[in-house]
Length: 329
Image (tube, rainbow, N blue to C red; front, top):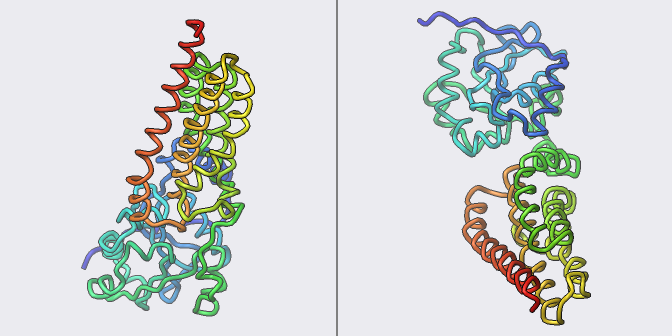
């Protein structure tokens, strides 16, 4: 029989480091560095009858679990998901059957607890074959609620209510994603804005900033109310709305020139702005359970080529108009 490895002790208290990691994670800074060591952790003073809850080794995921269980004695079995949260890791196979079996065996869990029950987060279900886990380890897998905050009630009653099972993407969660998207697209915004300044002046640069702002900041809160059923066309719709004022200003003669040139400038804005917003909106498919991996793949193959052609056409038209203006046409 293998020697039982050391059980690490975890606290339910929120430390300054926890808060700092939360801020950095929301800003996307050193995103892949927020990990805890995989293995078995004691929460409080558990015994052989205490519950075993499984989570990912992404620091915010582990923090959510241990803080939700404040005052409850139990074990946390932390899987090595390479610092990825439960839902994303399940979709990528990191929060999976083989990893769970490995951690059960390495922790020698059957010698530590008398029961044969593991409580997994509901969002981890896509990556774990419960029947395979039971066959290989004799441990039964139960799926707990979506939110860690509901765990105390779930543990007390032994069952999850319909509300606990419901997966949502409320406004607060949608807004929490905005800072990291702003940071991640900062260089993209600069690279996009500078050439447009030389091609179309201040208006074109402001248009680029507006398109990025719409994709990063306006899209998340407006998501439920934008028409169509996929993120790309929602983004196109929002980008077109944001582009309209710029197209109107261009058509009224901001850039000067003949009537056909003004129409050209207006069309250039309508061509290059919506695909920028639509492309950035695709980033949010990875932060909500509204989408599936297969659906996102179909969306990318269907719409990204359209985005690329529209964006290129808008830029080329803008450059052509700038050259024509410089030549006095």
